[in-house]
Length: 394
Image: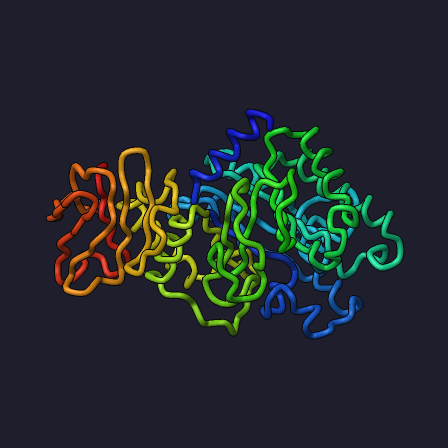
């Protein structure tokens, strides 16, 4: 593997927390990104949405500012979803944002803002396309089209990575059908450091860097999208929503509590995975306030406890009924939200512990270690009910 790509992979692993953005003309209907498919809206009615799309309140620097406040290190945004509409100025189609009343190239503005703030930017792209006539009639022509668009995105905007979603529509002979290895080699000829993810729900191909889990923790398959266990050679990422929707859904008010989101982030890191947490901007270009408030609270927690998330590794213990665990070269971090019986946490610890303290305040914590048995004496009430982190110096 190219050393530059290896370094990009390691940097991505250290980021641990990113923002997923599902945004397109479907936001005008406020019923999610699959609205065209689920409601069987004909193209003759759906495509004219572009004539109304004019998100005058979109501000790339404000989005990036929210990412920074949340403690996120990267953004993955929909350049094209399954409806086929392009959120950038593609030279290969007229069905794009620069042909709307908005006229501006949103992806370019976001790419510039990310570059200025040193936030990594990845592009989601759907090979599945509900509107392109060649998708059902001329596979060779369609393959040339979608390969051309992905190459165009990399050449034009120089993203940190490409995140594909939709190859599950034709799962048989995955690589041969979609010509994935061929595309990956062409992409790496343009940018050897480019990271590639493909949410095809199968074992990662050799040229894919990121294995992603949808609405689930790595290694679990509660939602039925993730039958393949984590691959030892892949970067692992879980993509999840704040409510139950990816694209803007005005009626979805089932927003996860900040404490739940903080714990999900810790559980992902504890499984050696990144969390890609989704927002679905409104048609005016703003991110709904319920999501902003939760992201800002997560950022506040990270400012005190980020050492237990960023640049850490997971898989410290086989199970953590009390929470989660991460580690770096000098510390083991215990993320606690389920207080154990009698407030005593007992762990098998073959390494000698030099000290124990609450990470957020540096206040010391009483502990006993006899041979390989470590006992932590916890207070009756954890200092942060959302997630209290103990730093063990080893």
